[in-house]
Image 1 (cartoon, rainbow, N blue to C red):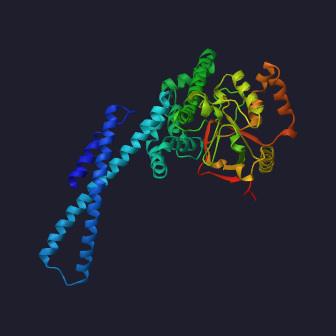
Image 2 (cartoon, helix red, strand yellow):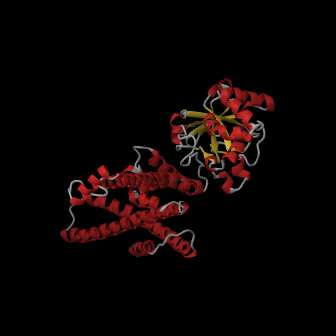
Image 3 (spheres, rainbow, N blue to C red):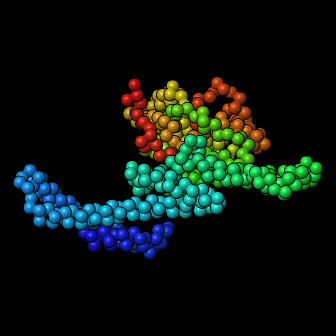
Length: 429
């Protein structure tokens, strides 16, 4: 068994993990095979250990052992203890290899991010690996990457989160307070700088401009951290497509802080997209290209985004275009039940065929859902420039509160299993 442990330790040390390189695939296969061999050996040893434990129990309850036997046992105990330590070291190395591999996959998925994002990622290496470890304990292999990225994003945008960028930037900004001269040092250059600010307008203006540029650069650096996780989520297989306003977007806040705790969606087999016990996915995520279903509508050119919104809000209840990447939800339980009853009557189907999905929005990342009115207002000016029919529709929806039904939208694929409840109209009581 000791040889098996040594073999695995060697494989782990030599394991270089990159994206699907043939050599790395061979190393991974060799490591898996070695682990399986070790497990079989460990199972045999465990069975033998139970026998030894039983004999030890008998010896403990019987007469005393000869001192020579005690000394011999002690030597055996030391050897077993060393084997246990080696085995634990191998387990730790395997865990480290798995966690490191996931980190490399995350870096690859966010490879287009600026350098500062990777510096922050390195700064939070321990915290990210803690998240990876927890996700690996509870997640299937297909979902590991997007679930890790989703939790990392949550911890990034939460001011009290374990990945709050303030932990990285605060020490740097404290150092910047002493720029360009340390006031505590009270050097001649410091006093000269202060005097020039008072008497030289051009010098003061140039200094103020540099300060503004530094402030803008720091702000951009801060934004790169959540943007990194957005990119990872957008590139991760089966990951969500979040609403994330780019810098300079006309509407400054997404309003996710006031998203209702519960959102509902009525569906049946005639509904557009994919609707089931685990996934709500748009038509574009099924029939369109990967890029079209993973592109945030807020990143599109404003006229294109306005047209997509108009088409979605005007589509038929039993149909939808293959380019539609949006899915509708409502915060009104009354409305969703009324709509469920209407669909049953319209389709003349059994109540068991009409389903209602309820999700707890607290369990989803910031930007998973966006209010329809927020989106309509964000693109209202564009709709006006485009003219009818978009202008007329946007004016009507924004100006008539009587028609508001608490609608919210999601993009692409929403994996809701484990954080939702799906019930049929028949069982809704």
